[in-house]
Amino acid sequence: MTRRLCGESHYSAALLAVAGYGLPGGTRAFPSAPLPDPEWDALLVAAKAHRVLGPLRAAVDAGALPVTGAQRQQARGAHRAVLLRVLSLERHLVALHDMLDVLDVECRVLKGSAHAHLDYPEPALRSFIDLDLLFRPEDFGRAVSVLSAAGFTRILAEPRPGFDRRFDKGTTLRGKGFEIDLHRTFVLGPWGVRVNIDDLWDSGEEFTVGGRTLVALSAPNRFLHACYHAALGDWPLRLGSLRDVAQLLPTSLDVLGRARAWGVQAVVAAAVADATRLLGLPAVVPLQSWAGGYAPTRRESRWLGLHTRAEKTFAAQAVATLPVLPGVRDKAAYLRALILPDARYTAGRHSSVLSRVRFGVREALRGRGQG
Image 1 (cartoon, rainbow, N blue to C red):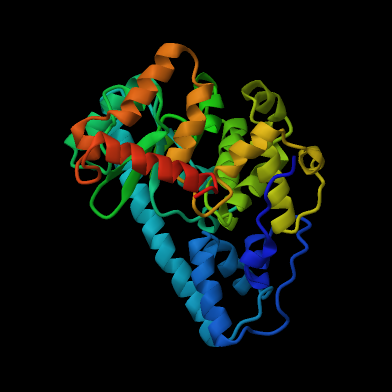
Image 2: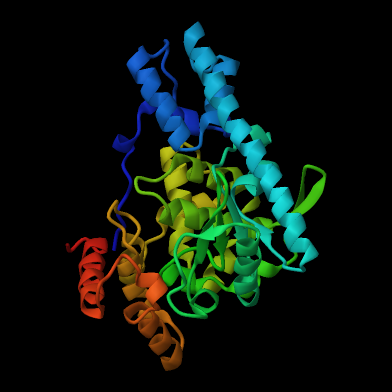
């Protein structure tokens, strides 16, 4: 069964060239002359949304992307602004790390800063707008308590006590001017259940920010997480996430065994094939050839389909999660938390159990493309 592809028509030719700029063997061509101002303005907006202002600035500075003098200044100004945001976030990251370390709460840094310092030739090429931290399931509640005591506010309450630790992807806390995504696993839904959480807590890989040594996932786990984020994140696909996959491809030769052990080959194949196709890359790594020929099963295509649509919903992912949970007790606890959550979780959203069930059914059908 084939999977739904994200077409090139979702992006301008210039944006695709920017997203792949600097990657070995990339074939996406830049325009031969400066873009008209309306097209340039649209490119700047899209590059920011897709987290590729770094490659845009690099292409402009190298002369690969022809621009006017005014456009060059705009590219530099936009990149400078996002780097100031990144520097501010990294100061917060260091402070959070120190606070958690004092209280003996272990974490791993995910995505943004970890990718920037470990996987890109220059950290300035990889921008981000929030912080992502991974916690062990048994430490999750304590991490939320510590950060809440420090002034962060949880955006959405836990459905029932223990739901975060047992079932959820994580939660988001809001601070002054930024957010922290706390993770237990990579994603909601059945693909998240398939992640072997113990594998995420191997030795990891260290990097330095502001004189502090932080710990990211190991390179194989960063690659798997990048594949999850690229294939199961935004729709249309975010080009910056595909760029993360491409940056890690040369180190991915030993990752397929872990993907098979987890049963997530379809996620890896989708992310690698899409990065190769949309960024215009040659298939020089064996994993790329494997990904291009991978045929997902009907169930894998159905699970991927929960994410390959703009109308993806939590309810559809929740319904798909239930059958893959281990054991009757877990299934019962999960279902009870979703149908009969605590009042704090439903406050201001649902007036009764019946209204919540009706809403959930509508959202589940919409998220499966049947609404």
